[in-house]
Amino acid sequence: MLELKRFAEYRDRVVGNCGKMILGKDDAISLVLVCFLCSGHVLLEDVPGTGKTMLLRSFARSVGGNFKRIQFTPDLLPSDLTGINFYNQKEGEFQFRPGPLFANIILADEINRATPRTQSSLLEAMEERQITVDGVTTKLKEPFLVMATQNPLESYGTFPLPEAQIDRFFMRLSLGYMTEEQEMQVLSRPVAAGQPDTLSRVVTDAETAYVRSAWQEVRVSPEVLRYIMTIITATRRESSLFAGVSTRGAQALYRACQAYAAISGREYVLPEDVQYLAPFVLGHRLSQGEGGSASSKELLERILEKTPVPMEAL
Image 1 (tube, one colour):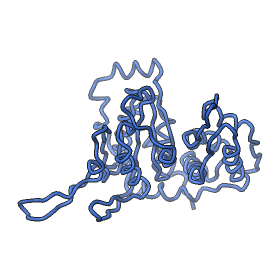
Image 2 (cartoon, rainbow, N blue to C red):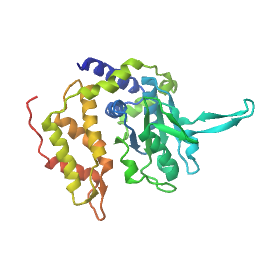
Image 3 (cartoon, helix red, strand yellow):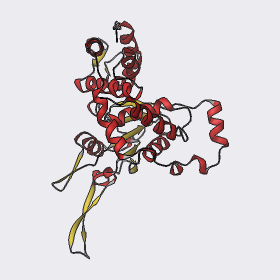
Image 4 (cartoon, rainbow, N blue to C red):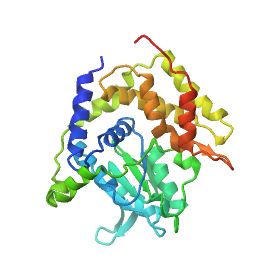
């Protein structure tokens, strides 16, 4: 039987702890938590200085994972991520030196600044949960979460991710600016109080293992499942879109709704969960054709407005 109290306590502790560093972004923290539960990865698009690095560092401290930050640059090589075999003269043998991808929680900063070859190396590790160096394959330890950032304002010296690779991200999020009152609190607090290293771990490995598996017990009624598929099918029939949502995207929305319902204290999914999560899960999976005047976000909003919402007796 699903223990919803454990989900609520886990969410409150993690979101509350991260909220000490990132003010007013509880919704974004909750969405990162949904990705974490579903073993998905996050694409975070926002202007510099809005707290992307602090968010993930705070999250890693809260759940107790090993955190690594990788600054992507054009000269970054795949071996800089995966690790290398080097010759140890003292031991007289080759030894493997693991790269930063062997951490639990990884911030891939400005992923679009690296070459396609390096981007593919990261995305392969994200998808396969393993790394191969010199013919030797090593499984990555769970939990494994990658949050990649992109700067939407600057395109000079960047290598945009292809649509097929963007599709591998579970959600696309944006933090945005804080309110004036929240930003004044950040400006006036002591420097030491704003460091994620001051945070302590608030959940155990056993609690994490439970919430990362038990959310799959959340029920999705046939009416809500049909509602999800109607939205997915509508994106594929939209004439202004070059390509609609893939089956991977449909699975992501289904799983995200289950996990979000669990941390919301419910053992069933509501149509409102689908409406809330669809922009984050599906928005980056829509490929717009040439000459399209509306943005992908506007097209998705239009599809959601047109799709009849099931009225079910829960």
